[in-house]
Image 1 (tube, helix red, strand yellow):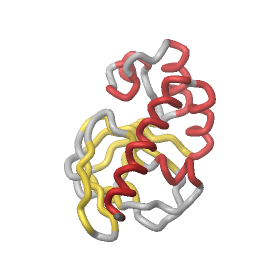
Image 2: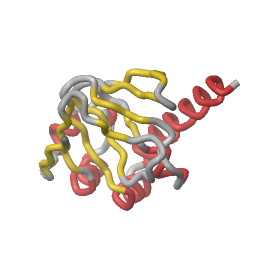
Image 3: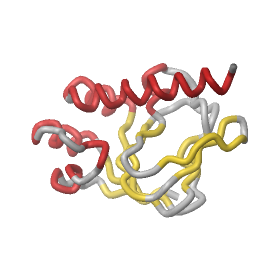
Length: 142
């Protein structure tokens, strides 16, 4: 399942694609709010239909995304997953399964909200990802 290690080093975070260009203050906020998580291949990271309580930034490895059991995408380093349920306060709209062993940064609901408030870069990147995902979902449904 998940292996947890609370310590996040700002130097390590700066090397993660999602956090590229973050200021030292923003990286410190990420370090204080996030948690390093490891997942073995085959681990279900997100379960469609369940209430979301965390989102993840992929640092290493890849995961497959399924909607109603149908494969829709593969996601890898630098991608965030699970944020839609936290922003929209709805159940998860997809299942995400680790294809390979993975390293992720996890944010609980409250930590995710604080991150968006404290980091303009995080807020902008999450909103860009949300818009792209909403457009992809609309295209799939039509």
